[in-house]
Length: 475
Image (cartoon, rainbow, N blue to C red; front, side, top):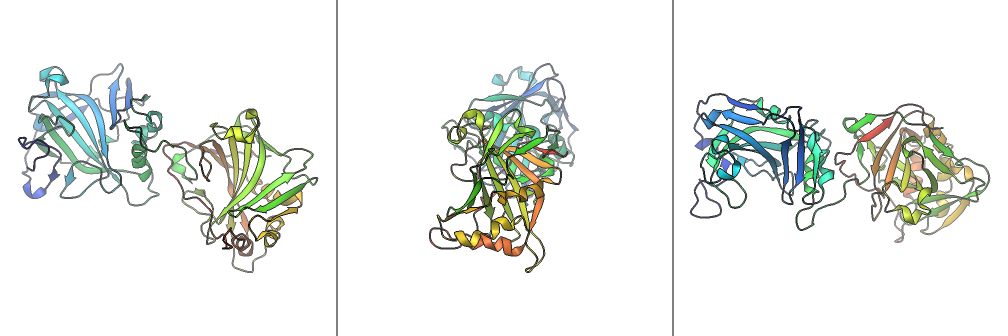
């Protein structure tokens, strides 16, 4: 066995488990009990160096016996996780030279020694059951529903030493790995200082498949030095059915968007097309739905697109991409001004409309969207602005004709990406022509280059719950 740390120690962990050096042994059945009971609760903690889970409350202690543990009974102490900076390498043990994304280590202590503190200097003091966690190679791979009982709560323990209560059966995903017969066992050490050689390792070879999002949730925790990625609700995201719950909301009310009085301005910002309604007799407002009692005032409508008709919208629905996305930004009037909304979790509401090119070149334009696209040749230069009729947003009515929208808590998709947005994404896509889509790509940035793409790449869901309103909620 290759040694690690102190050169005088010969029973160190972790190791590469090489089948060429493995002896097959018949053991009595390995029995685990109480790890996924419904009683009590589980406590999850960011220790500053890992995530630790303990089982608390009114429940019988979880234990393990049998197998290589002879006649001793080992009581559950905690679960800790090991991970790395990429999905290719993060588990401590390897199997025939193969690395895994993460490793979950379930630590038990020998009841013969009464308490864990008396086990450090005993060769049979601890029994550590190890589970490999592997990200499947497809980015859109669904999240493991049982492992989500852990990852959906990691945002609660972003800071070191923070804790949270979670479901008492949050370890039920362990049963999946145990269903495949066979495991490896060897005598080794704990893998943190001072590396006591007191552990009987039991390693299950069948990896538990998790999503890339679930693995990334661990990497976003802050360590004791305060480093890490603190942002948990970034946008845009893929709106996946596996992360979506249906919910009934009050009607979502849009007021003042289609008045024929006043005017609208259309501007080439050098990054996108910006539309604002001015001199309206009634300011456009958004309220109801997931916005509770607040009223949100329209600031502008901006567009996101890409170099091709097959991908350009920032949000997608179940990994289905759209050509373009129009985003109507509103600010919460409770805070007095737009500037005061950027640091509020409910400061901004963005009503998002997906647009899809249909048919081949030469197909007729969408007449309501033409009230925008017909004017784009007049604002090709960055900074140019024109006045258009106030009914240029009538295409919104077309999208609202069909019921249903998604909503979730997210961020702005432009710098500094403030996490202040309630997103409302209309699920019914607006059909546009290829010519109308090309009109957006033919305006120029500050270098006089065509703006062929301006969308932000999708971010991780990080356990957020997406809600879907199915009724006719937009009026």
